[in-house]
Image 1 (cartoon, rainbow, N blue to C red):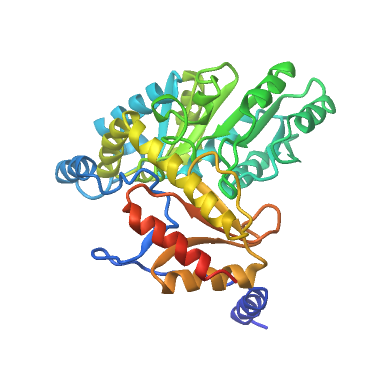
Image 2: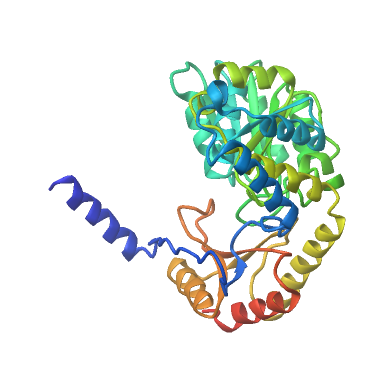
Length: 383
């Protein structure tokens, strides 16, 4: 059997298991779909101030960054964005990446010292899982153990079982699949007890939780705490693209000097950096937007539970709705799209617990009546 036959066989097995994925391009203008699948929580991706800032930088710098940050890819837009993110997140320094995925890969590897034990929450995003794998590559003694989801006592037991060993706890704040909130204060206290470091992926909390939308770490009162660093994407509440690592100045220096996912990657386009910076200003003053997001999340939960559906308790803008299985989840999402409503469809292996569900991401840029009509469609098309 040649390799293409093998790929065909694997594709057929995925099809039989209900794990087929499809790319569905959307129109640039006049898209009639109500978007409850994307991550533009605050509707900033099309805000006039954001588009104007991006357009100005596009004319000044051109389409791309033309190189890595250490060659010719750094601009004043990147520096201003890093300064703004560090100030909002409450850390001395920040470093911007071209994606949140690469930010997580770089941060986990930089913080997992030689011989370290990495404790990773069972529901962590794939980028964290891959960061843990990368941290082990070519380094003796680095080991990853998976902790039960959002369980400080389990983390404590794992750290106690490895006394005297350098350790790193990695968790999301608002988890990307079910939208629940990690017990960050309790987890941080455990790391302090054992001299461990802690890395928090704040991707789904930035802009949604905390003072001025500073995220889950800030909401927990841990911004700038010793032994703690934060990652986030710029592609959710900021409506842009890219990622960030925020923490001590020494961590930023380590990433710039040694981080392969930073050094050898073409920089975030300056127009995107400038647009993200404009969005950051709007986000910090966006209490009305955050209040509307909370209101819509609560409305979605009440509406769907009233129909007997099993729905998560959202800490931010992620609402998870259980589906009977992968085939049913796929058919449900497809039926919603046929009716003009885009929803996320999460199936194994993308789900950490093996359960299929729809994921709704609240978008306050959607008109209120369109949001309520989208909920009606989801109910009507249930399996």
